[in-house]
Length: 204
Image 1 (cartoon, rainbow, N blue to C red):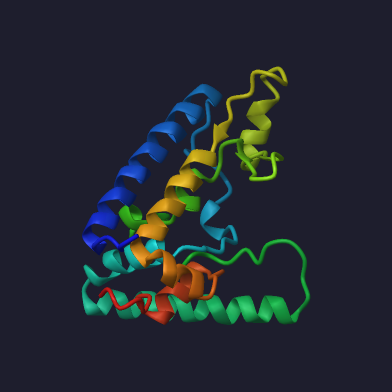
Image 2 (spheres, rainbow, N blue to C red):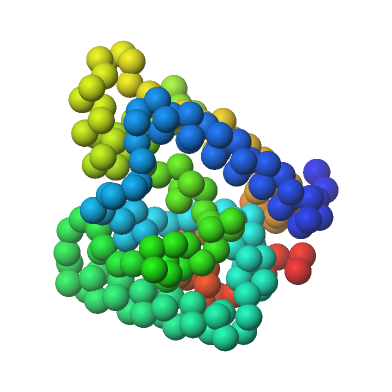
């Protein structure tokens, strides 16, 4: 199967993100979940990302910023990685609790280009695995508190399965099936995406 042009892949990714937003809004509305007044900050959650298409789309957003802002975000990303290395070296448990380098006064500097996990984090969710198992995730602490108001069979839950499937298809068409088989699988933080520059896939 031939690779699609980046602009086509990005358009498909944007449509997927729109569907994610609609599904998330529906579940959060049914649950009564809002980020307003929350004492916690999801931007300190530790996430690693796995697709070249999201990496490239993040850089599409970064490239639209002034060089001065790009340089500032790179400095923050470097500080994040230094903090992460210190945390790993200390053998600590749980999450490092480091602030995302894109967070600016509580807002995302690249909100329209943020990662999938940033868009879906918070509400209770589930994923149907290829082997038939179902993985359940309880959501953020506010979600867990709100779930207490529902009976076990009526908890509003976001099913991520189809979103993952569609993202995998976009990734395949963006990178190319043969290239995808030969490329190393990625497991990188957003800070690593920023510091590495756009993915080198011979498409930029």
